[in-house]
Length: 101
Length: 101
Image: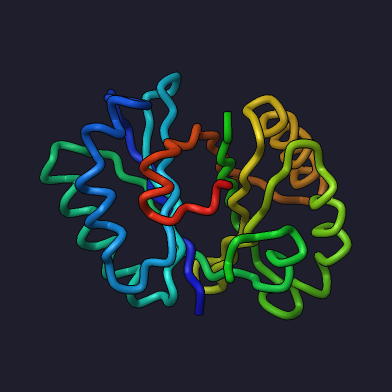
């Protein structure tokens, strides 16, 4: 069952192009994670937050990734991680052009 | 600037196919909202939550939608709405096959 993972956390930067430069190797490694279909990288310099929205092929790979990524974020000094897992309502999402196929 | 809107809230159902049946007219109306590129409908029967992840073309249409949708949810009896707006880091998202084009 397709699973959405939302993660966000307090983040003081870098944002934008500097974030891209700092995180490109991490993005390439995330692209190889089991079950990952895609990730959108999210950032908000005004609220000092960042995170990601992910689509995984199933709940188990999403939960495994969340466990690993939370530990990695914590080890890098991030605290206050907010994460939620959801199933996708497929027909409603397809009505709204949701990118789930 | 592409903007992600995350919304989730406590929800006691219906989920799955029954949610689809109840919400199909709403999904069709959301598909017509200014600036909307797509919405993924999210649900979690185990945690009794539901919501959505949206991509909008810009921050203004996303904020306008959030204001309208929050009022609509509140009027329908929903409380405890959690909503966040984020910019998209485009190059990192494209590295991870993020559906932003």
